[in-house]
Each structure stands twice: as C-alpha cells, then as structure tokens.
Image 1 (cartoon, rainbow, N blue to C red):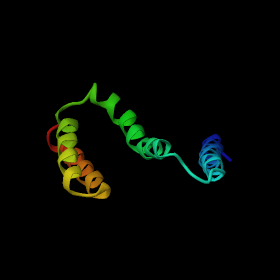
Image 2: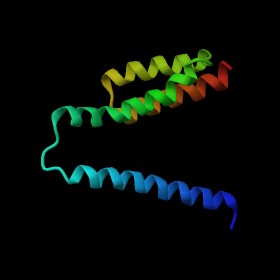
Image 3: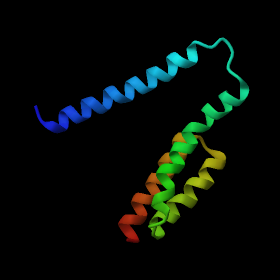
Image 4: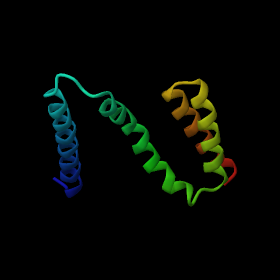
Length: 98
C-alpha cells in the first residue's frame, strides 16, 4: 500500500484518539464549571478563525466578497446556509472575477 494511505490512516487514528481522549477526561467530572463549558463552546469558532484569518492576508476581491456574504448570511441563517453561501460566492467570484 502507498505511503499516502498510511498517512491518512495515521491521521485518522490521531484525530480519533484526541477526540476520545477529551471525551474521557470531561466525562470523569460530575459538574462542568460554566466557564469551562463556555470555553469549550468557543473552540469551533476559534479553530475556524485560525483557518480563515491567514488567508485574508492574501485575499483578493473574490475572497472578500465571499467573506462579506458569509458574514451577512450568518446573521440570519444557520451554519450550513452560511457555509454554502460563502462557498458558492467564492466559486462564482473566482470563476468570473478572477
């Protein structure tokens, strides 16, 4: 089997172990402090920010248009609507604007 296959398998195992490890640690506590819970709830937004922010440094008009549309849709729609609207605008803008 190829090296790429084994890299994918190793990445999947590492991801699973980190997720199950966090679950096992948190499940040992009867009560979770509200500050800890708030911090854990903020993790997805923090991760998304770390993925998006560096790209904005090199962003062109297509990326900025997608960002604006995504921000506007996030005020009214759900997470899936926000993602789909941003992706659609980004694809269309890259295709037609450049």
